[in-house]
Length: 94
Image (tube, rainbow, N blue to C red; front, side, top):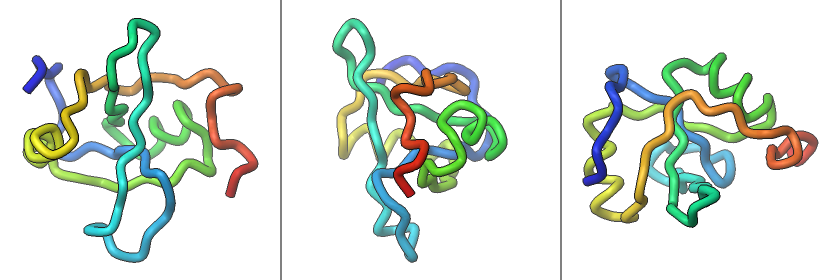
């Protein structure tokens, strides 16, 4: 797994869509400027909303789960508490 920054016990992660069951959540990945696949993770819900907007679907997961997610999806990097530029957010896409 890629080297991880120090993370809190749980993280809030963006999802493709809202779901009723957490097990059905599909995580949303972003592409970095250098072409890597990034999982954005937030240390608190207010930070996710500030960084991605109020309409962004999300899920909360234990940080220990990230390794299993990486094994399944093969992302390159975890970015913590990143502010996504407004033109790249889901605002208005409820």
